[in-house]
Structure formats: structure tokens, C-alpha cells
Length: 357
Ligand code: F6P
Image 1 (spheres, rainbow, N blue to C red):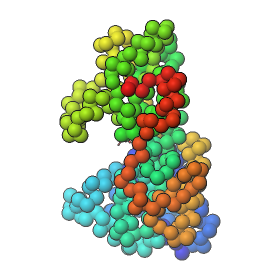
Image 2 (image 1 turned 90 degrees about the horizontal axis):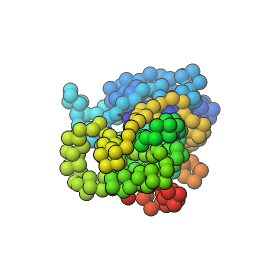
Image 3 (image 1 turned 180 degrees about the horizontal axis):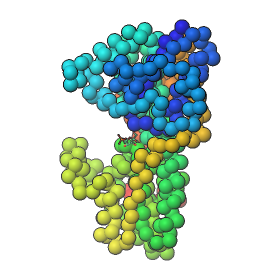
Image 4 (image 1 turned 90 degrees about the vertical axis):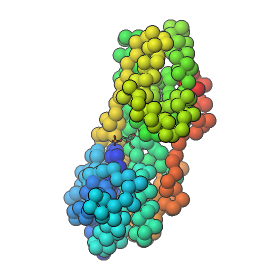
């Protein structure tokens, strides 16, 4: 008999269900007796003992379903060691739930913060397996995270749609792409969508260079310009501020996000019409793309195999097309960012894409 706990934590994304299905199918086909406990709304369910026993029916028909059948919530890692409003020690509470249910292991699906807590639970003696989820693709130790490719498709489609209207109206358009503090999603969607200017957090921009790139296009007879701007994009000037000073500046900013500030600066300097489009959470929604379905089926199956072998304490990663068990202790707390000098950026620059640097 295997007793497995499962939870999805942090911002949701496509293919969470596909990954859980992969794990459960991999186990049910290879383990005689199996009990799956699904914790509701991320670590909250584990802390407060909010769960349900899942059956194979729960995992039927969910390969293509977006969101998560278990629900999710953000439980910041920083807060994990801080007692809740009733003085409850969250880490002890999670351990108690685990032991009360006599679990063999926890399968934890989530991004960087979730992974840190998974590693904390490992250090506390629990058996954990982590599956790398996020549209941001910023998890260190895996080539790709699930949700990323589906989000690229959506962000690219947004840029595609903007192309036709931008061309009709001879306007400058900014499409703001998610990605938190990293630029993976913007880089891929920007190139796939044929953006003329791509601004990433890893390459602080000079607004004069951005305006220069727009003017250059105008002089060349191109009536419109498309910018793919990462939500975490930062100007050269701001990147030299301390973290604290930058936070204070952002809190004081009259614009809802960096894209609107850039739009204003372009309008002021170049006198052209600028519009901002923010696809926002649509990038995390809907059905997973085929790539993510395959990725999650493989990661799920590989996680099941690790559980069968009782080999715990790993993230199941995809490296050079192969699933691998990467020790959580080696990757937890590290961020995978875009290398500003990588070949992909050099190639993009050679075809005339500006990164504003
Ligand atoms: O980490 C995924 C992500 O979608 C980021 O790209 C984005 O910055 C953040 O989550 C948005 O978080 P929330 O859904 O809490 O607004």
C-alpha cells in the first residue's frame, strides 16, 4: 500500500492537472494498493488538514484541463516559520498532517517559493518529490518548466493580434508579458511574435535607445513598432538603485506598470501614438499546449517511478530531453535567469531586434 499526498501551490498554470494525472497513472499501473490524498489550496491544505481522498475518477479527463483540480494559494516561504494568527506553528502542523495520514511521500507541484518550502519539509524529515511548475521558466536545474510553452503560445498570439491593428493605425504598441523577475517568456514570445524591441529584466534598458530604435524604424518607412516588455523590465537608471530605493520608487510610480511609464516616455519624446496591451493572467489560463501535455506526462511518470523506488528529496527535471532526479538541496533558492550574452539574444540582435541596451 502506498499513501501519497499531493498539492499544487503558488500561481497556477496550464498542465498542473496533466502532471498530477501522470503521477497517478504511473503509480496505479505499478502499485497494487494506492491512496491519494489531495490537499486543497496548496500548503494551506497541508497546514490545516484540509484534504480529500482522490479516486481514479478525479484524474480522468483532466489532461487537457487548465487550472488545478486541487486549488492553489500563495504561501510565501518567508512566512512559513512565522506562526499564523492563532499562534499555530505551520511547519509543525504540516508535519503532523503528514504523519497523521501516515503518508509515504508528498508530491508537490509549484514554482521557486513552493520548492523552497518543499526543501524545508525535506530537511524536516518528510519524503518529498517536486515537479517544476511556472510560466516564468525560472526554476534552476531544469531546462524547462511546465506552463512555460503554453504561456508562450498565448503571449505570442497576443502579439500576433496586435500586429494587424498596429499596422493599420501606424501606432507604437507595447505588449506587457508576465514572467515576474525574469525575461524568458518575453524573450520567446517577443521573438515568436516578431516584436521589434524586447525589454527584459536581465538587460536594463536605456529609454533613449528604445526611442532611437523606434525613430529608426519610422525613418525606414515602417509605420508601426511593436515592443514586447517584460513586466519586470527595468531601466538602466533604476537598476543602479538599491533594492529598497527601487521598491519605494515603484510604490510611488503614477503608472500601473513599467509599460505605461515607457509608453509615456515614448510619446513625450517621439510624439507618436502609443498603446499598451496587457494580456495578464490569460497567459496562465486555458488548456495546456501539446508540448506541456507531453512534458507533464513524462515528468509525472518519472515522479511515479521515483516513488516506487522510494527515492525522495528530488525535483523531477527535464534536462537535454531526459527526465532526471535533481536533489532539492542543490537547486532550492536559486533562480534561472536569461543570460544577456546568450546565443539567442546575439542572434536576435543580428536580425535587428533591439533590446534597448
Ligand atoms: O509566477 C507566475 C506569475 O504569473 C508571474 O508571471 C506573475 O508575476 C505572477 O505570477 C502574478 O501573480 P498573481 O497571480 O499572484 O497576481
